[in-house]
Image (tube, rainbow, N blue to C red; front, side, top):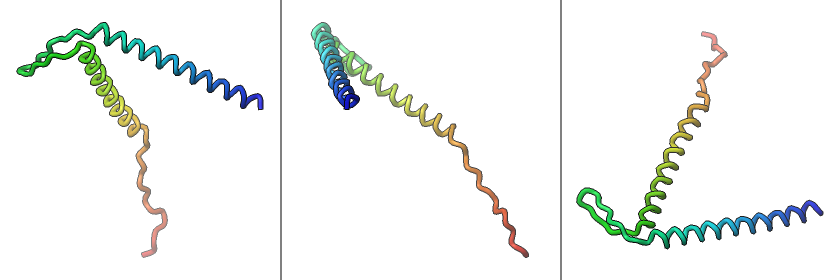
Length: 98
């Protein structure tokens, strides 16, 4: 019974720690947006756009994250196929009389 109580209390403490971490990240996110609210010109070939610096940085980070996830998934699937042994088709061992 004491183990269950300790487990329950540790779950409550983990939830509290998780809430504090999420709140700190959200606060840093708000400070980042406030400090980088100025508009910048983004030009690529003939295409131009005026966008918030914070939004541009978040888009670049998201695109980089997605590219990293794709690269990791391709490399992990390649490693998985290399580790799997190829099954050799065995010849039948019994011979039928002719």
